[in-house]
Length: 429
Image (cartoon, rainbow, N blue to C red; front, side, top):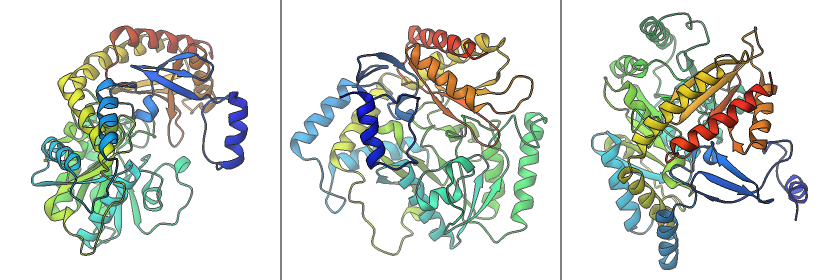
């Protein structure tokens, strides 16, 4: 069966809004390390990792072995029964979270994790008002869409929550872009403080330390610490959405929030994607008093199922034992500098940003500063022709390529990918 045959079947039974990359969508059939192959046998260097989900490597032997062995015993039993792998992974994550007296609840996705965090925060605070960042993305559920500050990913304005949007998630655009870092933080804090004077007490602020779908944008280090001082005075919770930034991807820190740690850890952390290395794992970490605030029964049929927990345990062990956070810092730093060097003379590249192996390349119409989504699509196509898979994103008036390979990326693979990307960018000048 050809890709065109499969595409026709896809379109006949799946929603029109289910996006596919590329003019001729590809079917990925298998992978190994940092590479994947399509149905025609073409090999690609994977710089997007299933939307930052293949965190360590494709077909990592330690994970596939753990999944196979667990599947041979029992795959699933639900949270109504004791579950040793779930307890063991919760213990590891609780210890790594930085949150005192932490409790962990497992879900099947980042969307569901953020949904749970919102339920906990609104219940604990007895408020349905949520603060969120402009240009943010928090998932596809009804409540998560309602707090998403990115129009391209928010199909409805209906919501069970009242959402108020705060400045600060995008450093180089917006009304404060011309300010220095300290002045930028001060202006954003003033904006937050003023906003709080015009509304009923919110339940929480939810923020991605690095905005993922928004194009890998981030504030200066320390912004959320400054926000937390304002929030803590009023009892407002801080939810760090670590679905894309967790597990060492940013290189400098294990969690993205640690770039903003001077005022202490968040009250709630959500996670997903990379911990399962492709298996469906999400979750929430919160202080016990917050996690235990629900006064009705709650279970999860598929959250924490044995086979996914076995994968998470093996994947996390591999990540820590092989210092993949350190590798993200070292190889990611080299890759960012290489990309900045090769794009310095390309007029359509406005900025190369990011940290670790979470890198955004913002594209504009030369001489205008205006977003160029057509160029982003063209680069994606050209990079694929060269054997490289990328992602894309962006929010209001921005268009960005997203570079997020598995954290085991080698220096040679980083150089190879940068060369392919350079050729792709030059091809659309």
